[in-house]
Image (tube, rainbow, N blue to C red; front, side, top):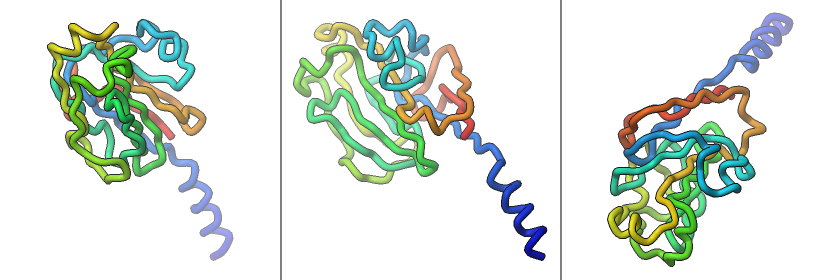
Length: 167
């Protein structure tokens, strides 16, 4: 019995786990390489996509736990229940706004489900006062990822798949 149970255990470990990343904000997907910031376009912090937003809220793109929410509320990290680390960063140089235009809805270390509100946006203010509102969504622990499929087109926050990853 030990021989067969070991065989099946190893086979189980080799099964690829597929996880969908859902849009954290409504808008249009753009290639990460087109983000007007080298930290994102050159994939220094990870690989992913970016969204040109039309919505006024950022929601959880995965089931998991909120990591860090920056004091300026322009960005946050989240870890999925499967160990995927995502970084969502609203706009470029929005840290300079010192939190203006953002309202935090949830606290760090909280468990969230796909679609739970995390940050509310004053999009008209942010459009006027930001270098760019393009919002990168990146996987920061790419070493755990076997493959990534990036989608394109229009997105609806909490509804549209933006990436499908295989662990």
